[in-house]
Amino acid sequence: MSALRELARAKTNLFLEVPKRREDGFHELDTVFIELAVADTLEFEARDEPGIELLIEGDAELSAGPDNLVVRAGEALRQLAGAAGQVLGARIRLRKAIPQGGGLGGGSSDAAATLRGLDALWSLESPPQELARIAAELGSDVAFFLAGGVQRGRGRGEVLTPLGLPPAPLELVLILPGFPSPTPAVYRALAPHLPSQPREPSALLGALASGDAPALGAALFNRLEAPAFELYPDLAALRDELAAAPEALGVLLSGSGSTLIALCAERAGAEALAARLTAEPPQAFP
Image (cartoon, rainbow, N blue to C red; front, side, top):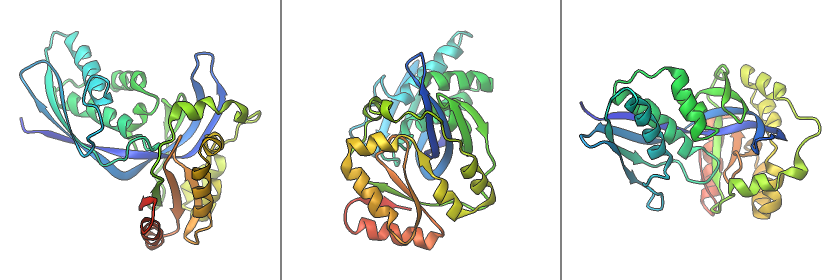
């Protein structure tokens, strides 16, 4: 069998509310995920030896060991199939394009692509609910990436409701500030900012469905911005600079950061903003 290929697209959150901290230690989420064009590529080949061999291109610092979500996803699916008496192995080549640690979900997307790719490579035909169960165990965002598109996520982010695609593609600029915003640190600083009355995404969902870009820009929201900007004042300063750009209809932190996104009315504006920003740090691309 020739190698199978899967794209693992990045994501951002156009809306992210954190209503409360749960008794299990996780935080309750209400979020709107949207899949982005930028993507990693994974290729899958069967091998005679049992287990997962991972080869990584494009990110020398990324571990290819058992802690990598791709390996963990492959082993979880292999164990599920092994219960039926199958001994399975695969070689996975991962070509990275999604920046690491920027709130774009690259690791989670790679894990979901691994579940899809190995399920096809090994002809498992796993029930969708089994793949969703494994995805939820791997991480809160992984379940979204099994289908991608635009979805509302609740619970830890794994309780998903598909939403209709916007009438036209959204023109977003991704801005990489050049320093991380670690998720655990942001959530540890969140407690003073938890809402007494959680915000609902109704305005954003309406603007998304109608394709009203200015209204969508005004409705972008992320509860994690406040703690992230307190921890990293340079990130807040960059957000303010972007918000003043004439092309930007709205600016938002992607997940827990550190990537920022700027929504533009048209492709030409997104390309102009990205080119102007990249002429001097930070790095940006439409």
